[in-house]
Every structure is written in structure tokens, then in C-alpha cells.
Amino acid sequence: MNPFTGLKYIPNTKELLDVAFARASKITLPKSRKPPKVRAREKEIAKLNKVDDTLTTRLEEVVKRFPNFDNIHPFYRTLADTVVTIDEIRQALASVTSAVRVIRSIIKEANRNLRRATTPTEARSIRVAAYGRISSVIRRIDSRLMVIRKAALEYRRFPSIDLRLPVVVIAGFPNVGKSSFVAVLSSAKPEVAEYPFTTKKISVGHIQLDSAGGQILDVPGLLDRPMKDRNPIEQRAIAAIQYLADVIIFLIDPTLTCGYDLSSQVALYNEIRRTFSEIEIFPVINKKDIASAKEIQRAKNMMDIKGIPVISTLTEEGVEQVFQDVISGAESVNRKLRDLQVQSL
Ligand SMILES: Nc1nc2c(ncn2[C@@H]2O[C@H](COP(=O)(O)OP(=O)(O)OP(=O)(O)O)[C@@H](O)[C@H]2O)c(=O)[nH]1
Ligand SMILES: [Mg+2]
Image 1 (cartoon, protein in one colour):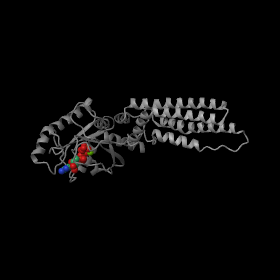
Image 2 (tube, helix red, strand yellow):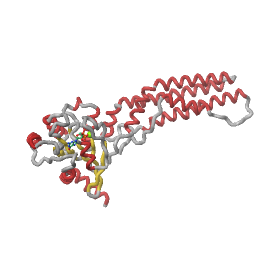
Image 3 (cartoon, rainbow, N blue to C red):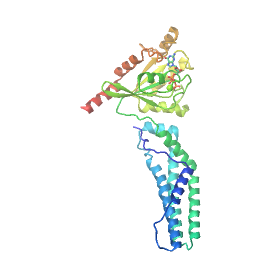
Image 4 (cartoon, protein in one colour):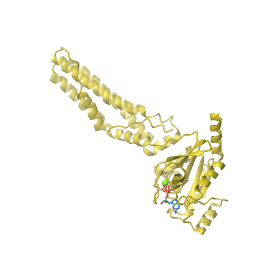
């Protein structure tokens, strides 16, 4: 499950300050017979305490809602790192915590001075000066707040994966038909387009397997290059393979309409097979509707695997069958399904 669903909308610096000061300005004190200078003092103190309530409490809440990165599943940790690095977010959260501390001490000091104020004008100017200092503390963490805003916005949208249920990852080069494959089989409606790297995020489609649910993941395309050169978008696909996949269906486009040559696709296939040797991987040739017999034969020869299926996600020919064959042939999927059956007894 996505550990970031508790993250809330985070206001920007201006909104934060505007809301806090506006609420403080609406403060009214109950009627009393105290002298005006005491009342003025009390009102300024009440305003500052309201700012403490709205601004600092709100900022504390922001920090509290982030889960401890050490305790979350490595898939989500890796995914988070591709949006805003964990170091960056940790630093940003630490800055907010220390800003809260500074604001509290400004308010405390102002309250102390207010108790000694002798005129309403003096009381007001102490409060105004405190507002000024608070604003500048908040403005100083503006860029850190932006980092947290961005993280919260993106992290919240991560797919929710149920790790007890089988996960099938559809992998391959960009533009080979991965999203189309997922769209044919599941409830997911991933974006399909004729340019590479259409899919930038991982999306999950839900399927029914026997009596249990299964998940089919549409992931960004991968190029054939060393891990250290992979961009953050590719790293998301790698994280899904590394941490979630029970089985990988590896799509190959033999027609080159995807824009990449066959040998690079085969090299990527071999690389993934080697790197993640414990994960079952099933290669499938796609775009049968436009591939020539020669292109298909060439792909088969290069893959050097017997009985490699040939499908078309456009006409949907063979898609369902291939998927069923993979599910029934994949040991890890069957293990998970058996475990689920035992648990439900
Ligand atoms: N003719 C034909 N075109 C296909 C087939 N499958 C996908 N396409 C087309 O290939 C293009 C890419 O399809 P997508 O499903 O977006 O491919 P993808 O692998 O998800 O691409 P990225 O998300 O960019 O990595 C689209 O224009 C599809 O319509 C197929 O079986 N036959
Ligand atoms: Mg796609």
C-alpha cells in the first residue's frame, strides 16, 4: 500500500502567512472591565498565540505526516527518491522543524515583552515586529517548503500495490506496446501514444486470477544502458521490477516502428534476465499485425528461445492467451495464490 496517502495539500509560503495573520486579526476578546492598556496587551498576546496555533501547528503537522523513510517498503523509498531525493526531503523537513522552533521562541519573547508594555501603541509595535520576524523565518524556508509541496503532491499519487497479491510487470523498450498490453487486460486506462517515454509513472491494473486478485503494472520504457546512466523515469521501472515483480512479461517490437533496433531490445532482455535472475521473465513479440514474417523470424532467431509467442496488442490477438499461459506457468505467482488460499481457509 502507498505509505504516502496521509500526506496533505501543503500551502505555499504566502498562503501560510496570509491565513495565519488573517485568523489572528479576527480575534475578539470577551468583554471585561480591565483598563484599555491591559486589554490592548491581552489582545496582542492573543493574536500571537493564534499565529502559533495556525502557523506552527500546521507546519508541525506537515512534518508529522511524512512516514519515516527507514521504515517504508524499498519500492516506495526508491520511487520517492526519483521525484525528490530522500536527502533533500529530509533536509527540507528538518528546516521546517527548526523554523517552528524559532517561531515559537519569537512568540515567547514577544509575549514576555508584551506583558511589560505600557501603552497600546507599544503593545501593537511589539506584535508587528514579531510578525515581521516570523514572516522572514517562513520566507527563508520557502524553497524547502516548495520541495515538500512537490514531494507531497507526487508521493500521494504513487500506485497502491498490495504485496500479498501477485504482480506482473510489463517491461521493454519505449513504444513497444506495454501500455496497450495493460489496457487490453485490465481495468487500467494507461495513456498510449506513438512517441517513446509516454509512460512516466507506474500504473497498476487489477485483474482476477482464479479466486484472488492480481496486479499488472505498466511501467516506463527502458533503454539498453548501464544502471548508473538511467534517468529517474527509467529508475521507476527498475524499482518495480526489482522490488515488486513476481513475473516479467518482456515485450519486443520486431518491426522497429518503436524507433529502436532489435539488437538493443534483445540486449536489454538479456541484461534484465541476468540482473534479476530470480524473477521469471517471459519474452513476447508484439505488433504481429504489422510485422513481416521475416521480421518475426529474425526476432525469434535472435532471442533463441523456443515457442516465443507472437501477439498484437492492437488487434488483441493472442494477448489474453499469453497472459493466461504466463500466469499458469509462473511458479512465484502460483505460490502467492496458494498462500492466499491457505490464509482464507
Ligand atoms: N500496429 C500496432 N501498433 C501497436 C501495437 N501495440 C502498440 N502499438 C502502437 O505503438 C505505440 C506505442 O504504444 P504504447 O502502448 O504507448 O507503448 P509503450 O510501450 O507503453 O510506450 P512508452 O510508454 O512510451 O514506453 C502506439 O502508437 C500504439 O498504438 C500493435 O500490436 N500493433
Ligand atoms: Mg506506456
